[in-house]
View (cartoon, one colour):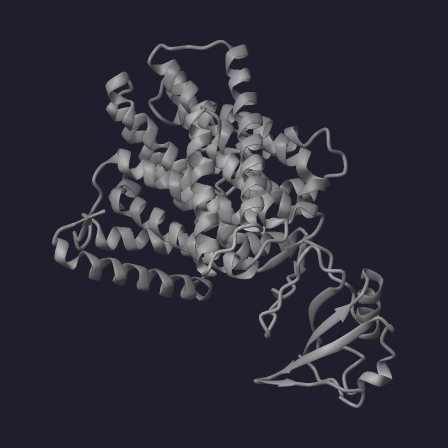
Length: 499
């Protein structure tokens, strides 16, 4: 970024970051996704507002956007449990390939009649908006803090993190079509398979190599382990991109591999990347807000609403229903909800920069600007409409579940995959039959123990006569899964299923 007065650059940057943090806190109360508020900060501090921040070039923005997306995906991979993704893997692959292609084609037909586009230009627009955005999906799903039935949450996160290769390939193919460099379907198919297979393989390989180094290096400072993993993420993206495979898919796969294996200082690393992912979201959406004028929204109101409605209610459902046709276990309500969570975000906006950067190669500057403005409008409407109503749609379809609180270990303990025992935090609901009973009266399984109780602002060291109260948080140690289930049963609760 460039500032009007370089001496005040650090001050302006700190103010923007502080306001972005406040925006993320107040977004839930306002019912507006934080991503929109981040973009609004770009409007305020950019050329259309206070004129305090300028971006060097579109090429710079594309570079920063891709790096930010890669780190967001890596953080998402670290938080993804492979056991939850495995049952829905092929559904996610189908959505990320066939679903994206179908969405692009249907949207292209509508764009041809709504905008003054040629068939190639209409297909370019359809390709750019065909994928769901990982940053938007991760942010909205986690900020809403809802659980979803039928393994929908891991499916949506898997799809959003793996469909960018298809969308990017379709975008570059459309640009090649416009400038007269057509390639056969066989070549395009080979390129897609190459990007997917090699990208995934590189991510898995680097992930395992990184784990090997982490668990064998003896570093003096704990913070250096997070820096080491950050360097691995950047190395994964850059090397994969250099061999013409998909770096975004590679960093996600590397994150999944690392996040599903035990390694030293795991908790501090996860916290580091969670904060880094938020910083990247702030950076990318503020930057996009700086370069995209709010006036463009007004000029795009009628065609923007029309194409957005087609994309939300026609193109996306067609892509979802047809790509999931072979999977009979996926119900109609599940498909409707998957169709609704087709959020657009940073990825389509970054891809929308490609036509403008290809003007010298033969793409019309007017077409490039129209595509960017239209994608801009679609993203805003998508995040506001679909993101805001996500919880209500889930409840209306009967797919919402109460989201269990994220496990918090007050003594900085962490559950590792190689532990022989299970450590879990359980919060007692108000209607639990265990309330008012002593621990000895619960008759807990022999190989289980409540080792700590968090009650209000204090910790209680439990013994047999300790009575439980509503909203107590129990830190439970159990030898086996069956013992843990027994504890839940004694408390009048069910062991929560992974969502």
